[in-house]
Length: 509
Image (cartoon, rainbow, N blue to C red):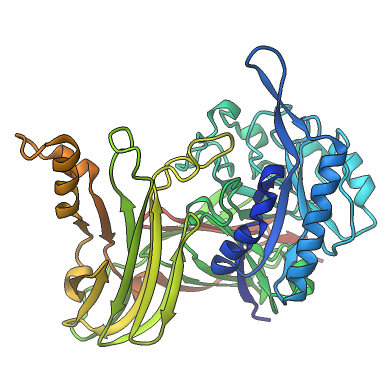
């Protein structure tokens, strides 16, 4: 059976003092994803002595009042036809690692035992899951304790988020955003549980505490018949999930027609099928069996065609004045429109903060309003630092000699298709920054241009990728008898990654 792909941020932590933003968070979620498992965060920094604070649970009365607000809100959203799940973050004593607990229905209460197995004992007879996140931190200090893992309760693991990558301790993707919690270790990493024979899927999600569904912090994909709560829950408990670090790479991975997350018989001649639709040119595909890369496939280099082309390219907006010198410049509005003589096939949203809208879209054009931020989360506790860009990925089919029209804040830019396919390009708002420096600092000339470049708003068009560069189909016969599980890791040339959940293998009868 071929499933649909539904996207979500499984790890958007809303705090007690943010509950008045529930509607704003939902509008962001609705604009960027297909369903929402909210993860209420019941902790705060409790003053201890001097300026020392210790993270602690809010008083029970506060937590229970917050939970009822979330329950009422979730029921209202469900009645509107949007799939929203209630959930909360559980940390216990830190000995078993952090988990987000989610419920299929809206009738459950939160509990806060010290250990994971007590948490399971409380929820084992109801439809509840507890998803580990940032597992690669030190055991006993909020890293995952694989000795207590229960697959039925934790059917998948979040291995990428704003914390970085917890898949293993050798990936090129660092895990250093939250320095106070690091460094990471292989002893608790996301793939370590496979060494103990556990069967769980893999996802990515944001661990976002300021804005939900931050594209650059990872998303989860669910393979389901529909985006109803029933079908999504079925996908989650059966591990039909995968994760992406940034852009929405589409994966269809099966062995003997069984999807990722399945448990199949180990045969000597199984049929593996993998279909990939990326958002940028693919760099390589890695087949990982029992935590070892057993094969790497790189796409074949292409010769640029001479007629009709189908391609994707990304436009990012942001950067801008250094707030050390221009503290008043926190945000920038971008009104845009893209027009083509060919056909606009799709638009992918790469949104990282509030204030983004895709206003209209048809086969010839799309219009959008974006709001880029300088340090949108102001570097606060659990905040997201350094968010400066917002973007869209356009997929277009047209003649290679054609020219696209991109209108940004009233200024028209000509994007030649053949040049898009050759290079990326930066467009600085130089007139704006020239006036800004002159007015505030009376700076009109200098022997070098750093002050102008460092402080100007810009937008960037990425090098476009042809359809043959961002799509790949692999069909092959494979001997599974030597393996316990097999999964796929896909890398794009721009660094974005997709991690499939494994297909698990039992001994041949």
